[in-house]
Length: 275
Image (cartoon, rainbow, N blue to C red):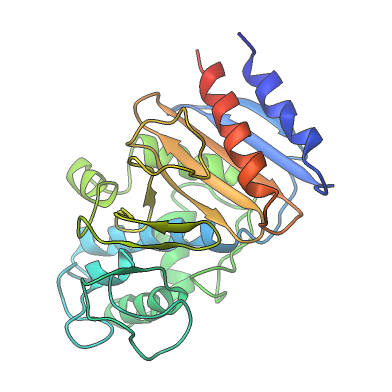
């Protein structure tokens, strides 16, 4: 059986990726790492995991209710978190009724952040800093006034701190964490950007859910409860709760066909190597 160190070393062979960092954590500490751990690229849509966690905190604090109106008519905070509000990927004009289809939307997350910021009475970047980044000691993560759907910058060590929080929550209660990491609006079909259509395309309140999707970016070994997010800048963070591990990858090559060969291979190798 290969070791986690051997599994992570696979990234050295990723074609066209010159700068890379990868790591694995359990619920307590980092258990393996490889590459430049100070590498701090834009993490693209992995940003949404930070954004959604801040919304979970806002919900627990009573700043927002998940079922209060937000976004287009008939939509709620819950719809926006789960990409079910009807917004297109980019654009303010809805293309479906809320709850009718899973339409992955950057617009929805921008609207979501603005809505919660208004309820909190403070700048959204400041709220995220106080609610998530400072408590998790994610000092290397730049969020601020960046686009809350796609523009944070971070490092593998910081994102593994986020992974540990997603394995063993401290910022929200167990019930909120369970609700957020299980399917919201079950049975909705939709397109996973740059990968293809899934029916259903299950999603939680922020994280994408592995469930039983075939041809998935997390490979074939992962269990159905795995959740996480990939980013168009060539990044990912996934959490496998049944095995108690999380894995993060950051590279300097944008998502493309190479990713759908490399990411499943890396994820499978990591999960095979978990003790």
